[in-house]
Image (cartoon, rainbow, N blue to C red):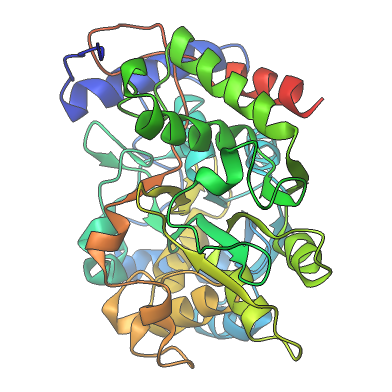
Length: 400
């Protein structure tokens, strides 16, 4: 019989989540006497006009970001408009971004959902005043007030874009066309030995999603809130899957090459890789879908450091990167859905927002955005769920 769990309200859940993370982070995080998140940033103007004036004095902003998020094609206009030079440090993983933000050397970060709550709990980032970010009013409602970047009603940043982790397969090698994730999990998969999956502890959630569908007696509700039995089942599934995996990929270029060379014929991917493979000079016959049971996905958040040395430039950056033209350029370049209808109207490819389902909230209702696992389960089980550190340990064991 399936386990039945009483769910807590979102405010209670988020408070517990941050409290649990704070315990883990206490040894190396900043704190204040009240124990609450910093709500003010030293040197930040009180109005947009003050911020703009102060930014001219600051003259620069230091960012930690994913590759492709900060490019000359759209940063030049920001520099000319604000007087803030953009210094970019590419982070290769969420773990590295968290580490870099702890140094205090950066003003902001484009954090994925498997990093945001860690940054919030450690007080390495601060809440933002959305009234000082004018372009936020145009952002799709589906990208506002998400549990991975909003705690107790306080927003900790603005969304850069969003996307789903898709099922990809080579149509010449995998038949019939799959409609579920079974092809990457079943031992007798037609793609056995040539399966390509994402190399990150957060991929444990993908195993949990498969178990949620195929083993309902485990009682999995939220795929990022796994108690010991549920977690152990997910780890066991991933160890079983390893026998049919051909590669674990960490960057898009690597996966594109593996499908081009036929070293991979099925796996988990982003829409970007599907588009690149289909649109290559010698197209690879791949297809990518959001399977019937849904998928994990991401919505990255631009967050401001709680000790930012250039807070005014950072506020202007957060507003600029979600402005229509800048956001259209950035999300189209990377391969993800823009954050507003105004941005969709300005993409070079007029079908971009259709391809990436930017305005399709029904589509994204089946996407489970990456969220940092914490010990607080968010229901009547209490603090018995596995946190991100345990996910990391398990992933290291799975990978060998």
